[in-house]
Image (cartoon, rainbow, N blue to C red; front, side):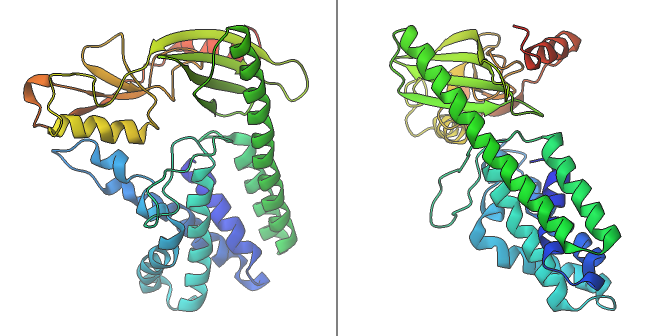
Length: 333
C-alpha cells in the first residue's frame, strides 16, 4: 500500500491500545512504525538492477522480523524522545505499527514475504489496490475523531470498517473469478492459472489474467457492487518459459538467473513485450486493465550473458489513457 495508508493503519492500531493521555504519541510512533518497513527500498546495487525489487517487501515485511525491526526504529527514536515517552511505550507503539505493514501489503498484488525466513513465498491476496482512497479516508476520519475526542472507540471502529472493506475485496474478487470462469467456458478454454487485480484506486474495475494452453488471456472486468458485471475482451499473449526463452543464454549464466529472479517476482506471469526489443515484462500490471502495456520489465542482452539484465520502467500514461480508464470505471465499455 501507499505510505499514507501504511502509516494510518499503523497509527490506528497503536492508538487503539493507548491510554487517552498517550493518543498523540501513539499516533506519531505508530505512524512511524507503519511506514518503517519500506526502508528496504534503500537496498540497491549499481551493478544488479533487480536487487531492489528482490528485497522490497522481503525480510523487513516478515511477521517474524517485526520485533527486531521495531526495536531498531525504537532505539533511533528514543534518542530524540526519551524525555517525553518511555522506551517501553515507544517500542509498543512502533511494534504495533510495524506489525500492520506486512499484513496490509500482503492484501495487495505485488507479493510480500510475510513468512520469511521459513518460507520465500510471496503472499499476494489481490483484494485491494496499492492506492485506495476509500480505505485511507476511513482510517484518517476515525483517527482524527478519536484524537479530538480522546476516545479509542472511534479508532477501533475505524479499524473494524477498514477490515470489513478488505473482506469486501474478497467478495469482489470471487465475483470476478466466477465471471471469468463463465467467459472461459464460453471460449472453450481450460484455465490452468489465473490472477485478478483491482485497478488503482478502486475495487470495481479489475484486471483479469488467465492461462489456457500456451496463451495468456487478459480482460477488463467491471464489477459494480450493485448491477451486472461487464467484461471487455483484451489481448492474447504467448506464454514463455523462463528456462527456454532466449535459448542462446547459458543455463548457468547471470542473465538466465536474472530471468528466473524476475519471473519469481512476477509470479511467473511474464511475456515478451511486443513494443520493445529483448524486453521481458510483468503481465500482472498494465496501463489499462485489458492491455499488454506493462509497467516494468527487464532488458536481456544475449551478447553479454554474464552481465546483469537491466530493469526497465515502461510506464507510459497520457491523457487518453486517463480518459479511457475513467470510462471503464463507469462501466462504459
